[in-house]
Length: 170
Image 1: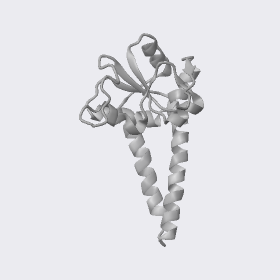
Image 2: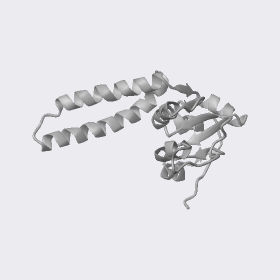
Image 3: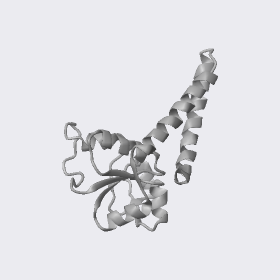
């Protein structure tokens, strides 16, 4: 989809870094990286396509309206350093990607009771939409219903006019 081009650019950067890492590791061990790179590329692109085809993606405008009408838990899953650098959506909750499943799983010792309203949908966003897509998939697999992620992430939300506030260091 054209809407995910920006995500794929970021994905390609990460993919390129991993390809370089795999190549270097292979060369150091005396092997050939060509087969490994082809295998890694086909797995990564295929896995990403599968994720996007099995989750709900909403537009930034839909997310804006859901939040404006107080009909969703809008959750920023970016790292705190990203929030401090770029700000976040006003009244969005911050749950770092690395803690999302732990904070929302009642069986986890890290569970944060009443962190989200169980009567509202869950809408996740990251910087560009890749991490939030994977996080959406994870929450659906955990049994959460009515979960979506924002197409284009924080960058797209800013462009649709949603209010951004700064996040200070603690």
